[in-house]
Length: 432
Image 1 (cartoon, one colour):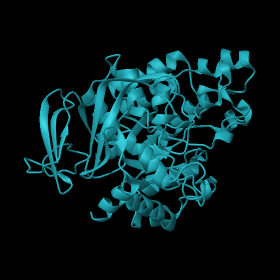
Image 2 (cartoon, rainbow, N blue to C red):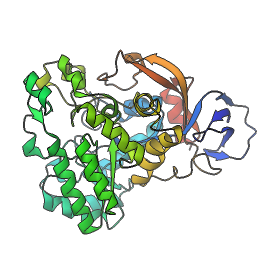
Image 3 (cartoon, one colour):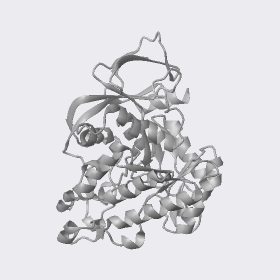
Image 4 (tube, rainbow, N blue to C red):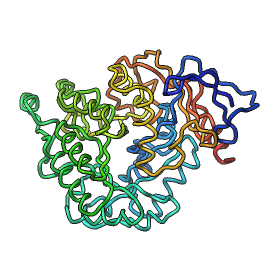
């Protein structure tokens, strides 16, 4: 395959050649993809995806979530552990990884639960998952905070033995009982129970100190407040091994959207103030926040089309993430395309210890590639969604750019903005 005239993240233009799943110096293939005017990004990597299978297939499956990822430019996703059964044993994580391999749209790497059943009472089978065929290296109880300090310390100590990382959902549970939105003047005006910023910030402060104490790697999920940025910045300056992520929606949307009680905007952590959004953008630009991760959280229609206080938390984000990052921090000049390649591909891969993303486009490296048209403009709609969930906060909103092609391990999963059919992708993946 020849990819002709692509604009690389550094602004230069080049032809790229792919053979046998890797980039080569030149090639004789008769298949040519015209990339004139398109930005060539390394395949995107999401460190925070909810694929729901096994157990919640009415919301999403590994196949439908992988298709959503591919149309959004992703070539690898890390699947969160809140399935049924929970991904807390070697058998379950191996099942999830096998499903991803079978479908072939993206590389699927399961995240193991920190505690058994996500119950926060005892550690899960961390060692068995790490030694399994899935070779799990990221562990998280996302959706639940590991609020017990002793358990968190033990988990951090355990993963140091094989270089793993604990990804914490920072939410002090007793400070957020019944919480429905960001705590502040607006929550009082709307009569909704508030989710205070300190509930996030206090857990991050505790955990960076625990990580320092035991010399472990800590990753902070979906950072949402200016105060959290301050704590992480302090910890990094101190040399603590902490990384952090921000979601696309926390880079663009604010609590003001809750005024209409539209449950598409109900998420955990909640949408915050405008000043928090500004702080998050600045932190991503200066490296305090390392990556963008979607927290893709599909739900059935009935879980969102209901009263606000009864609605589930979460938004789908795989299909829209690159456009939202474009709108939030590229158009503002805070990030360029080289920065986008870092925060949405190489850095999340490095945190998750995923091979093949350290030297994108280098001869001999795996051919994972996204071609993106930055000049396009679209009104985002359900027609742009490929997973089961339609709970997108961007429906009806004008977004810049679109993914034109996605190449996963040298095989096209998206061409001309359309998914390749599942049978073709699975067949080519099985032939290696």
